[in-house]
Length: 282
Image (tube, rainbow, N blue to C red):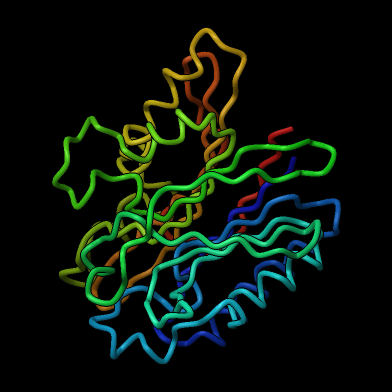
């Protein structure tokens, strides 16, 4: 099974340009239908992330027929693959959510998930999603798998207030026997103080290892769940890069494999590159 994680730096509020950038990166790989089974994009990747309130984000919110969902359907049909992309969503009753959609290539059906644990930047405009969720998808010759959809802050303690070792997200998906975890992230690293910030001059061609280590800590219940069993769990994290309003995002999109009570990093992108990470987990 071949999985693609698309990482780049979107321009805040410039949806058309960001969709164009995603298409340009994909075209460089000259992919055929047999080359990709799953494609995952970051959180709110076509709109950008750092909105100050509902008024600022309102022109960019979408419903289930918006630009992000339509793009995901087009790409799913083009490559015959599952496509997940994050976007700001307006529900039928007018509520706003930080959401992902995933398109099933078997029938182009769209499944939605709303971010359950909100980050401070979400709280100024978005409603809290109703809860964590898993879905069963049929991955063609690879068979059916239980898939967890998640968005960034979901893997953190609730509001950074609950017990650190409660591991709400990971524990939920251990209990539901999840096979794959699809995370769309806009992981905030820190605020930029000046243009010489060491994030950009210190090992720019490597992933942000402290972030990878933290993600693993938050997913650690998955390690124990595979001990003394034949179960294998994969976690795919698609994270954006770049800077918005002096907020730095750390890239480092990656694939983790949990097996026999151990974890391995299968591959990752670096902190700043705009690229497609392709990993074969067959």
